[in-house]
Image (cartoon, rainbow, N blue to C red; front, side, top):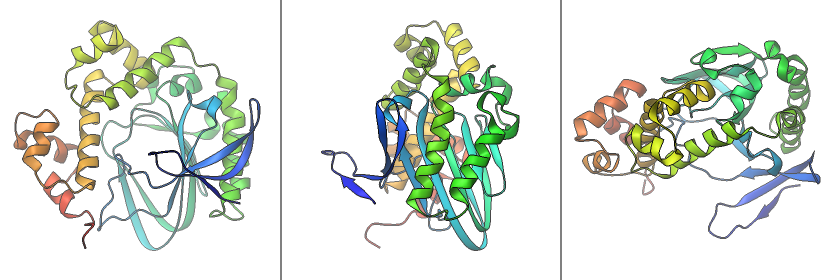
Length: 301
């Protein structure tokens, strides 16, 4: 049974079930109504029904969230994302993969009837699950069966057993999440360097005024070379990429909110002019900020 909780000014939460965890049963909480700064949706590129869930409290250092899209499509639909600086676990009805970070635009084409049960890991987690530098999987994916640290073959079977009968049911989602969490707890506690990189990415997300790598290095108490070694090992990405991706995520969020001044947005993001902003946005997404804005649904429509 679903149960809604209020949390002050935060978005509402919905409990869809419980999973076993440290200290007893933990609720599986659906995140209701978040605006995703990574998913490039619009009127011409709608998203299938998508459910997002919070991890159990003891796993917040390893898991950002779970997401489960379920679709039934008459025609193929390509979904595009600007991936966060993390690795992903995805088990669908026809594949099971570990995704490294993608520096450019990520895309997947959905067709027919299907589902995916995904885990957005924290920045710290990829290195722990791989047991090697994340740079080794940047821009590539691995079959989950090959991930022996997680017993990926058994995990994919457990997730499919949970999802296959009724992919849209909250109970199926809770069971799939429970399968993931049983495996992921083996990687606790997160090491000190992992906690540092979690902090680094969260700090950068919360400080949109930061546009230079030296500012990031100073904030986390590292020299620029040490920062580069850290992000290459743990994230498979450069500090410069982190800053640039954060700016693009902020741009997507503002465009989805219906900003009306592209020049003003460029200035807020720290660009010297609108042309520079447009070039960066188009290079990665394949479209201009103006075209993406025009494709967004309007609240007054």
